[in-house]
Length: 540
Ligand code: HEM
Image (tube, rainbow, N blue to C red; front, side):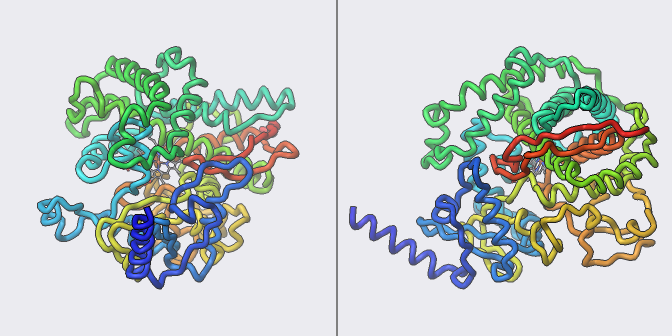
């Protein structure tokens, strides 16, 4: 026993003091799991220790560009605290190396970094198999290749915008009832209902899914939540493949089976959909993600094992992120009537006064409201749904001037960077105007692009003078960068813009006294307490 302990102690010191990271500053964590194991701690109702830690590290100039946590096993977790560092990791690091062919022949990974170990293990434990969120290399590539087109504006907008606009109208009716009764609404729950409806509609192309199988739509969220807690389970770390056994997974099997049966049934319904649109000039487009995936020929297994896993993963990734973003956004708007007024001014110029006919809302109109865009971007800066991006280092990798050795884990510190006052002055202030082009502020210049990915890129058209250091040029880190960037970004943006624009056009918001807005990380960043908001009808 003593010899074994000595072995671990010596190994710890050897690993730590012979590492190229030996001179890199330590990231001082107070949480036990973070400090000694480099692990995401279990959720805490009283304090968001992980966010506090990430912000502290991101704001500390001495921990730039990187800092490190050493686990008791002598394994480094490197925090990357600059935009350049994050680009090095997520863009350069995830791109195939020049010698990738040789690497593949030698059965070594062809990229310098890949998806983090923790998230891969956790996804395996919870979902029980490979999917787009836990695979790497070719296993991931074909999934992304198949699933990406339905999330591009060309297919997404015509198929989904009418549904989102009509669903937003139902939301407005609900707010209207509460406005009449002068009762407050708990928004996080309401937005989770909305985003669950939207993702399910879009995945399967219909709104007659059999929710009875899962005890109703509301229960569907509860089952998701139960399964999601598996991401916090210590069983994630069981070695030798033990975390893949039924014994390790037994707490999640019942919830997972229910969800997978529901997905299988929904896929059956999606098959009954209309045939794809084809014409000589355009590529095929499909009415649902399911239809596109099935037609791809990649998911040929008769038991639909891969297909169901991917759809489980898409549902997971696709609803609570957007719901919590909306809840945080509305909580800020409810505290800032002056920001609401600016939104109303711009929305009325484009959509007109309420009631707005859902059929009249177009992607082009949504794109002509840069202030609405600025509002959701500021929300995602202050409350990023994904606080850090975990990455595993396959080969020694340069990160903003320092070599991070193979075998390390990296946390791209999105939360810390977005609260860094040297990049975003007064980071605690909710200030959407930091995302506006300087010209937009003075000339009320309108956006002319389609409002999706391009809109948030750092490129500019030739006529606009650009201050390269201005915050609006900062990329959309909250959706992450590089090959694994968020697949559902356009879908999320469509929901965010429609809901923000239509609601603020029709109602003024105020926070119920006593409502506190704090964060809590339960896989994604969510409001720690209920978000209670009053609605009042505006003059048309
Ligand atoms: C505000 C809303 C959202 C935010 C902030 C967000 C953020 C992110 C982030 C940060 C990642 C990278 C995670 C990592 O590398 O560890 C990601 C990946 C992903 N997201 Fe989102 N997401 C949102 C909404 C959605 C929606 C609506 C979908 C719809 C299906 C979606 C599907 C995905 C998928 C499939 C991936 C994995 C992509 C890959 O590895 O190729 N997300 N998202």
